[in-house]
Amino acid sequence: MPPAAPREDEASRIYVVRLSEPAEAEIEAAYLRLMRLTSLSFADRWQDSLFAAIERLSAFPTSYEIAPESERFSRPVRRMLYRLGRVTYRVLFRLDDEDGDGVVDTVRILHVRHGAQQEPPPELEGDDGGYAG
Image 1: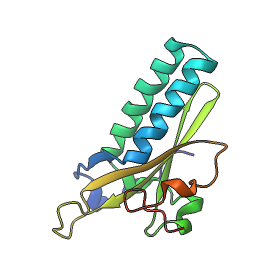
Image 2: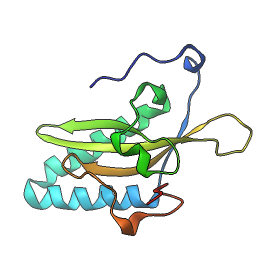
Image 3: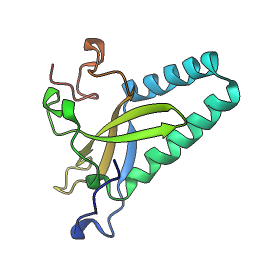
């Protein structure tokens, strides 16, 4: 599903994009799995393309829908679907006011999940992941 049109107040805002530790670990695990199941070349292309897609969240992150599993988190969580070939991953992220000035300025990537994975595993609960349990 393509993202919705950006809101007018978001037109010139650029957000900082940060990966949580769980998201970094999930990306690394997916990369190693793809390398084993496909090829080093495909895994490299997948990872490079994923990071490019994640970086594009710095513009218009609110145009992405609220994730169906958002109610499991302590704050609203959005999702971006990332696909390369037949491989689909869900990038779950939230918007944060990192510097505490009252303006949302950061896209925090919480999890990167294979499309077939539905819920965050309990071992990834915590503040960085935002999972409310």
